[in-house]
Image (cartoon, rainbow, N blue to C red; front, side):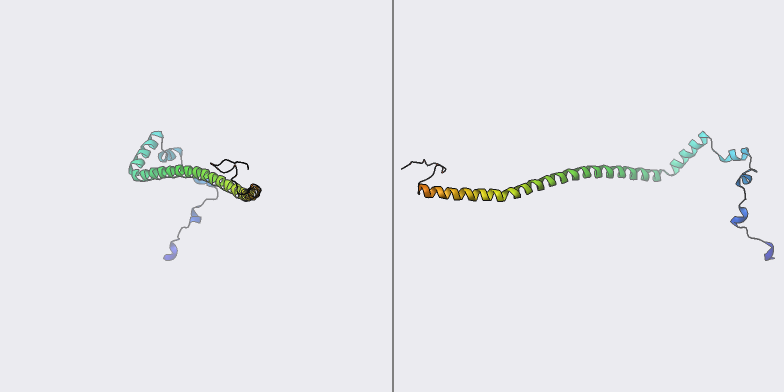
Amino acid sequence: MASEFKASTSNDMLCEDESESFSDIDDQEIDQYLFNDEEKRIVKIIWEYRNREYLEEEAAKEAEKKVYEAIWLNTREDLLESMERYESALAVLARYRERRPQQATYQMDRRESGGAQEKQWGNAPGPHKRGRRHIPT
């Protein structure tokens, strides 16, 4: 008796030509399954009512995403501005470090030349010292 029943498989249900598989369905039967505009609107209202929690969660996620994007854009702009300031400060520091040895050399030369003047004038105060006048002897 077990041999009398044959299990159907998905291959048994497939047709060689799909157009033939829909030829036996008439337009009136198809119209029963398709919604007109009013029915679509009603189904949408019902679906939104039944799934309002889901829709609220999705709206909250979307709002959170917009806030995050706004924060990221502002942060990115601030970050770029900070990087520009940092690079500018590094450039100023590099120029300072380049000029510092030159300034030190200049000051040493100035001190050495000032020492030569003191030898020439003796211990007499020079005109460069404040509050004292130079009186030639």
